[in-house]
Length: 194
Image (cartoon, rainbow, N blue to C red; front, side, top):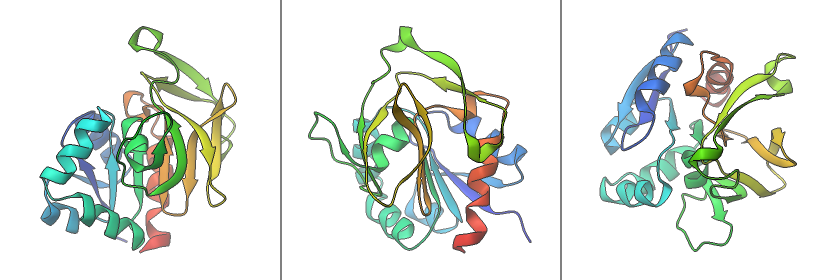
């Protein structure tokens, strides 16, 4: 089977780091900035950044509805940190627009400010017995999950990695480590939804 083509939304954030990790994991990774580029990919990663800015940029670049349509049609989607906020149903305490692709309520910057950033050995049973070196940078946590959402990892009693069908969300930044297991897990979601 040919390597899947995975798009990385390239409007802001850790684009290059995700591209490298996806390529190490066996995918063909491309940057996505237009609806035409989105149409050419098998899956999409939305990296970290600033969520209100990215929501505005998605509208400006004409990507909001095409992303919703592709994901609701089965295309695998993974949001990391800000990307999970963008994918969420809603944001606790804020009237912030989202793509509403993942039935969760997230709280922005829940683990603290930039100075509170940390790398934490995080147990993720879906990835095996070895803890994952999860990098949290101004990270959100999940305050509510809908019935369709599976919590794959928690920190301090809050979900930090969740999946609902073809949508994956992580509070942390796997692309900033040399451990590609989460990227491999995401690639494993692609054949099942083709």
